[in-house]
Image 1 (cartoon, rainbow, N blue to C red):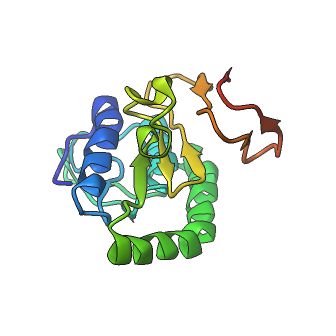
Image 2 (image 1 turned 30 degrees about the horizontal axis):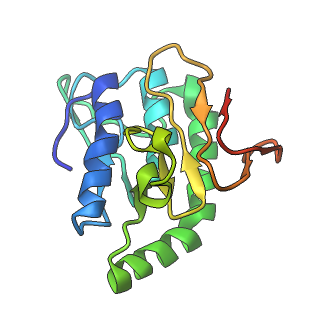
Image 3 (image 1 turned 30 degrees about the vertical axis):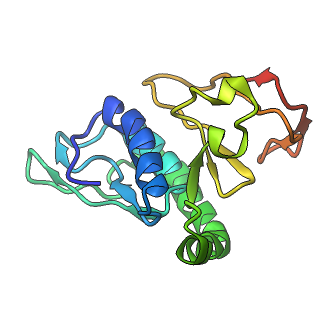
Length: 177
């Protein structure tokens, strides 16, 4: 998506840019995890960017920081374990990502999709720009604000939703934290 600056704002606004690219026929898009230019990302920013980036069609850590260093997944030991977990989770997603890319080539369906793509009848999904779907079934709700440990998430109407890490099923049309 270009050499974007390292910031929380960039992390957030990469989402609608990537969704738009997918809808316009560029399904294999992605962003420089950690930002490309500017200061090196803080431990928290790098962690959140990796946790978000593993759900993007293209996942790459690529940078040139102001101080001449480069961003790497192992640059902050304090967040190395959760970064490793996120990258390992990405490895489990590879068969799904492969299938989604093949379908994108064959049908034009984007790999990542705005909520309104599958839930146009749900008025709360018509203006959502930052939560999105990976394929049809994975609702991705990242954290984009420094210091945030949890956030509220709207579950679109139509499906029951399972929280990935707990296995707890949630009813649609609700806000959960």
